[in-house]
Image 1: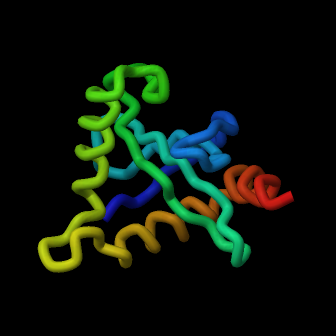
Image 2: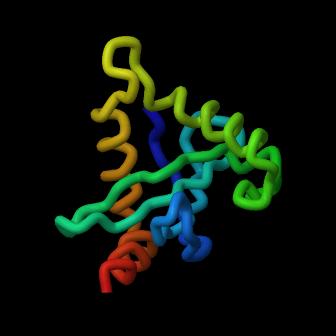
Image 3: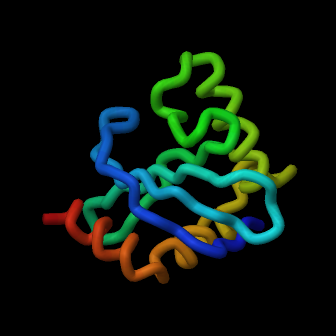
Length: 114
């Protein structure tokens, strides 16, 4: 499970055809920052579209080649995986709850709904 030390809104961008907030995350007990792409969903909630490790490319994960982008995604996705369900929804929910607890990030995500 990834616990968040700090999170900062970077920009609004489109990922997989969805309008997302790009959020830089400084996790506890982990080397390197993460970039999380979060979008608003129709029921008024939020969804994590993608999480990438940002440290190797100076935070410019959206500009790297597709094969490198996929490798970065899979490394970060390992944090959310589990042997029986493929994607541990509890870990993702915990991560998203921590992300939404950051007032700056929550404010920017709320603006995606407008």
